[in-house]
Image: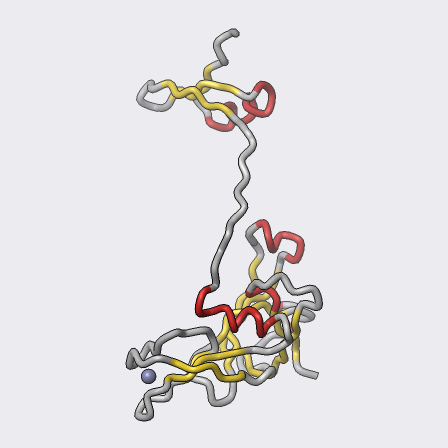
Length: 174
Ligand SMILES: [Zn+2]
């Protein structure tokens, strides 16, 4: 086998990897590193553990939150919380309303691979009547100029749930 070619620019290394699968990168200190390319994939096995009821509820078109069981506290959360963030007491599950208001929002013009097809997309913190914390979710069926703080929104659920947080999003309330 011939020695792979050497490059000082990593972009050229990447081009060589596309061509032949191997290249040598010489860095600014003169260190030469052999670089190879090969496929790599991971299948995760992930446990939602005590957050499981939240994700199972999404697949049934429901939003579950958490409520502190300490009588003097009773803080409510729009996300799964095994224990209260204010006082540390255990929480119990509560049903969240399926409508809320935009607490704040942003339109993302860059996205990770999972969101590329829908980029640009809106990401919002949704607040619910009587609930002390907010839920991060996408807002669909709206463009950037439609959105404003306090805008009423309602939940939509993926009809083919993936048992993931992306199973829920919000749309402007009709
Ligand atoms: Zn508490």
